[in-house]
Length: 147
Image (cartoon, rainbow, N blue to C red; front, side, top):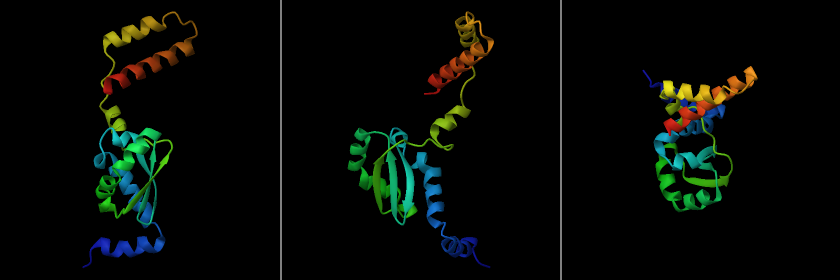
């Protein structure tokens, strides 16, 4: 009897999807590997061989992360990453992010919140606009509460 990974590894390599699988694993575990605020300001973008391209959301964070490059590589060694490069860009928030997990634990609006929203939108005559504003206010209140 052989282990499944010994059979799958050559198949994955032959199909040329090994790097894609490693990148997917890195993205899945990103918020476990790097906690706030690092995980909010950088995200894995592309993996080529043993080099990982990280997207960083601001020049200030880009400069800061260059100082931690060695520590970042050490944390990513499990995924066979030996070098990292940085680029400026939009940091992707995926479905596995801490923010998304927090949404699942969001507390519902209180009676006071609902009353405040109703009072605020009561002067809006257009029914569709009133509903859109109510929904936006509800989301804003919940978002502020979970951060």
